[in-house]
Every structure is written in C-alpha cells, then in structure tokens.
Length: 114
Length: 113
Image (cartoon, rainbow over all chains, first blue to last red; front, side):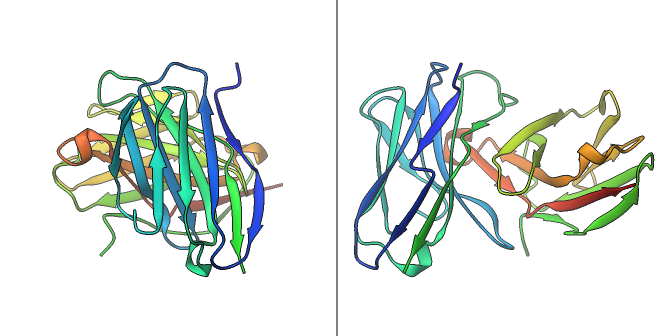
C-alpha cells in the first residue's frame, strides 16, 4: 500500500518556468490537499479538493493552480515560478467521515526557484 | 498573533525523562485537535488525536482545555527515537468546508543519552 505518493521529490527551476507537481493516493480518499512548509511558518494550505472535479482555495493560493480530474490524483501547477515559491510542498489526503479523521501526508517535494 | 502557537524549543532531555509540550489556539471555533510528529526533512505523521476528556496512547498523553484554548502533550520515559518536531494542529469546522487545518510551527525535541 503506497499511501500518498508525490512526484518529483526534488526540483530546481528558474524564475518564470512552469511545472506541475503530482500527488497520487491509493486509499480511495475523497479529500486531498496541497500545503507548503517554510521555516518559522508551519504548514500552510494552498488549495484543497473535496472530491473529483472540485477544487477550492486555501490560505495561500496565489501563484498556484490545481486540478482533480481523477479521484486519486491532485495536481499542483506553478505557471510562472518565483523565488518566493521556494519551499517544501506536501500533499495530503483523508477519507470522508467525522472531523477527527486525520490527514495522511506524502513525503514531500523540495522545490527551489533560482 | 499566530492561530496556533507553540514553543519552538529545542527541548533537550535525557533518555527516560518526562517532557511536556504546550500549545495554544486562538480560534474558538476549532473543534478537532491533533498532534503530528515530523522527523527532519520528512513528512508529518499523525501521532494522536486529542479528545476533550484527554487520551493516552502508551507513553503519550494528550490533554485539551477548551476554556483556556490550550492543548498539551506529555511524553513519559523518553526514548532516543522520540527526537523529532511535534506539531500541534487545530481544525475549524466552519471554514473551508471543515477542511481548514491550522498547524503550529512545531516544538523540537532532542532526547540524549
């Protein structure tokens, strides 16, 4: 059982380049999330999805777009990368159910924008 | 003021010690609380949920005080393998379809021989 898988694990981009981060989960979870983690800031929610075909903005959505065409995949896009987007990105998923359902995280993507 | 505040530490304790971490949250609408553990350069992993009546899982005890908006985590008989950063997390059911998790910046624990 792979759980939540993120690709790529590492990436270095130049300012202005675009890229897509892929998150895949094999647990049939309804909800999926993209976070970024920066020193001294804690994890911050970028975008999330409550089901296939739906997405919503989180706390820090600017500069990012997402898509959930298939239930198991949640893509995070950077259309024009900026140095401020240098961060560690985590994807997470959780099943429907009570509010105490925990989120399961992927092992992160380390992104550097030069 | 951050919504979820934690002492960043580090807490350096000898093996076998008991250590307690505190966390305060400012959003009174928060209903669910968790402690996650994060090892260096790894993903956060759920350590335990925090229930109103307090709950225990082996050497770990979590407490919630809604009146003071305060959460705690107690680790007894610390092991070297407990060295990690502990994240306090609050969920607001009224925001983002109940999907808004607010993470503290974490408290670093180092258990030493």
